Length: 362
Image (cartoon, rainbow, N blue to C red; front, side, top):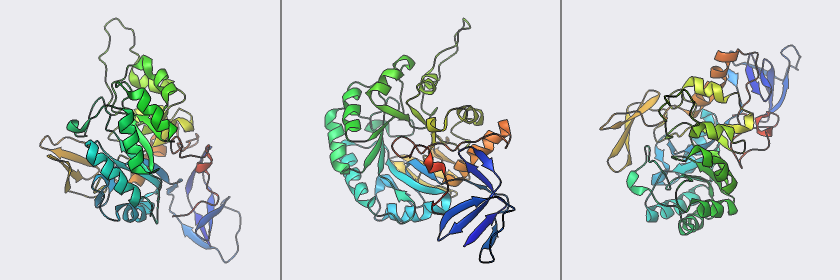
């Protein structure tokens, strides 16, 4: 039995300075710092660190030595063991835009890999694409139009393991594609989209319930010259209460002030995702994301060649996750509530996921 002391603990109502009791590897209680415990309790000073519930990462293309597109044998189980030590308790192994035949083959093989996970839980698969309006860092040659035939092929190949798919809903055929995915219980995210802001409410009615990496690969409109503000795509997404916003909180993908702005939203409107890739957290390690597109991980960032431009999140998930309370406190101070985001549509429990009692201590 352990008593963790000298900690700042994030709970749904904010940050508190209390001690945590650990029994049989699980959080048993949270008590005041002056409340006594018996001699059987081992005191562990966490040296003022921030403690928060583990991230449920809904967008993760790889970690350590594995890129999920490659479906290396035992890749999910091996990463699940490593991820728990980096603040991840659940994750969706994610794939990028792939050709039709490759896509279904990868989904089928990755679905079988997701059956076994011994650390962080593999909750299923996220297919980021292939139906995009803008490729971003994905292979533009692999973009496809959404059809019911494509949706059916993806669902059949994944055999119940497909849990999220990212799509540009403005593409012809998207409504039927989204309807088929929603009918199978798949969370459908808007991403890599050039959608018109006035159509977002309609897309939400079709079944769009989330956004993949808010602000990234979205159009930036030039200002008007008549002084009237522009209603942008990101404005429309913030204004639509039924859509949850996925946020890469690494200090690279999204400006810290935009992160602080989103922290004003209710906790069920924002969830964290990493977009992590192969060799995340490593230094000066290179891999081929798709043919001819090489990515080199550096300290806290990554770059592609030959352009050598930043492309991917490569620091460990816990570092990005910890930035949220820090960025929030920079604006409001530690006395204000800092709610943990929900893990995203279909993966939460109405906010109870942010409680500690009986959760595994890892």
